[in-house]
Length: 363
Ligand code: SAM
Ligand code: SF4
Image 1: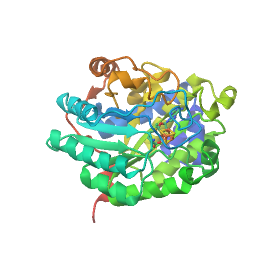
Image 2: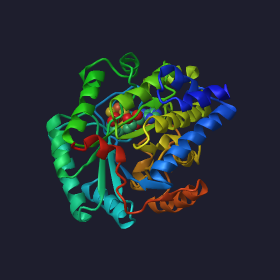
Image 3: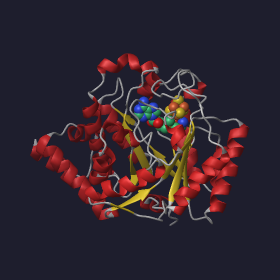
Image 4: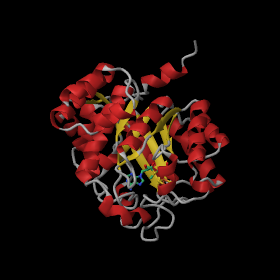
């Protein structure tokens, strides 16, 4: 078996069967896989980790994804919406602390009040940092015009997870209506690339109904789509969501964690020069989860800089970490934890994916 993994890794063409074998690797084969992905990561991006200060500015959402704790129909949570000043203060915190970039994320809304507010905030953030703070946004599905307006206002990276690249699985995870349409999501990813964003996607790992073949196909989807950045992590159940009824059919949480690390490792082998984020959901399972992902292939981390009083209400899943830490605490402990896996923050750098420049290079 070890030999099988070594042979697969030697071979440049990874198909579904080979990837499934890698995702199932245990013991010494698993170690071989992680050594290979760590080596590629170090060859391409060294031990540098890029920071994206994460501002989860609102949990108000028009959608009803079956897995998500802030879905519209969950009446058990308190909804919040940071003021412009709170958002700008958080961005300034990131700038003053040399984070290099921020991520603005929220529930999905598409009304014009929301979209113009974002345009304005993007311009303000660019202004307060003299254009120096990189901005990633993750605000769901929007029209091409809105994506373009936000791009022109200063956002240059966009994260839109496909969640599951298999349309049949996607349909099991979402209500059957126009707001939750797989092909619309795919179209949005295409629009983002066309407009010029560094385009990121991702999936949840260990979902109900998901097979190893689905996960292997997810990785090939990312490669075929020529994606620049990926944020993917374990699915973690939430009591007030429809998917909770399948909780006894899920892989144990530690297995979902381990599978997420293997997904990152295989993706690093498949796409050597993209940015891969160590997702917060990894940290919800293991306090060193993100650092373990950094060690074997991820090169981006998103320290949460949302003001502490709001963090408990951005509850996508259970046991979300760091909800009572202040942004300063997170910064201090993160540096120390990264050093434990021989990694160091690339302060003050945007840390754009090399892949993006290759993909968009004019011949
Ligand atoms: N509303 C935007 C969207 O859906 O693209 C951005 C915010 S949404 C909360 C960000 C990501 O959280 C989703 O893409 C999804 O993959 C992840 N997420 C939601 N519920 C989750 C859960 N129960 N476990 C793990 N990740 C989850
Ligand atoms: Fe809303 Fe995003 Fe959660 Fe879906 S995943 S319910 S769009 S916040």
